Image 1: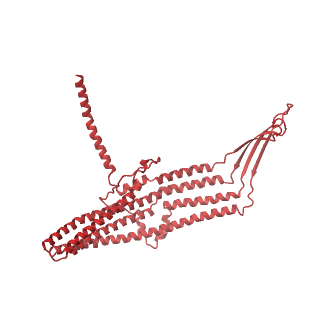
Image 2: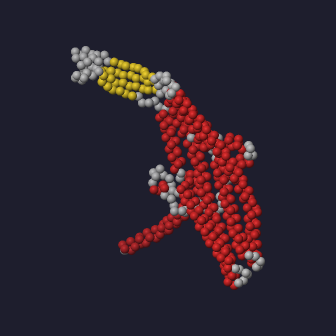
Image 3: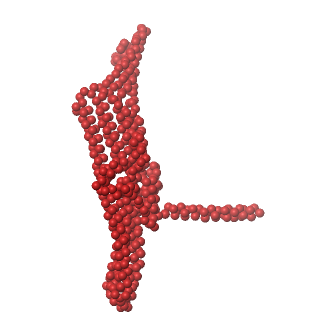
Length: 465
């Protein structure tokens, strides 16, 4: 009876565990599939921004600067002194001489002028550049990851186009071999060799494209693999063996400020200058300019005196006769006199002014570079759009028509086999070149979007500061 009950209990446990086991397998399989899902461009950009250690580092830098700004605005610690004065050396007896004293003193220094407030202000301004730097970094990540993702997409799509045409070239090779072996249709041995040669060339192109795809995906894994943690463990830098991209459909990239593209080139630099001064990179540099101006004010404080106060209390022991001795209280101030300023304070102020002007120069250099790069990308996009229309409206239809005509002529014994092969190669080359143009267009749009990345919330925060 006991064995029967035990057997039934075991059977119930097994019956209950099997469904859980299958559920576990299903969940594990689903989770594995999610891990290996091909990445879309949007997912790749989001993961790159999430896993970027630079953004975390910059946040720590901002926190450190804010903490230092509070410390810099605080008075230096007072100095306490303790000592024996006029202690006789013939017996070191504290009660022997009237002038022997036990002295306790304290002194406090006060920095020159508004030095504390200006030091704190400078560090606060420098910390304020970090949100702009992080915004600029995120936009740069978008450009870099987009370019790498599109490189992998381009290689993968080119492979797909070649593999589609490879089947056709294999059919042409089979037809040429049959025609040559049966002496039908005037096919020559050189036609068979030509078909074999083109197949070999296609295989070589496939190898090159797969190499390009592997390189692009490995570079992409640098940005999106692993999960960043502050502990810097092995899991933080681990990366999957391969990263697959989702090439089922070409990503749609839209210009953020398309109206700037339509502006006349003669009016564009002025428009762009007014627009780019609100770019995160420019705002970060503007924070450095403000900090350098504060540094000039800080250096000018050196013309002012540095003050200090001190107080001391000196204790004297009673005489041997028992008569008490008066104790001493000392109070004083001290300050320096910046009289010889020609080779010190004057030069330090001049150096600070020069450094501030140098940073202002960096601002204009950056502005000129951004305008020039934007105009270059704009012109590049316009030419790429012209080429894209030319390919889609004229070249591709005509090249396909030519290939069909060559194949029809060869089928009717009116054409050359070499012309058929040449026409199919032209179709493949044109389709791949059209793909390259579309990829270059999207890369250019991503680059233009970087220059037009204006964050209103960040601008508002900066103005409040």
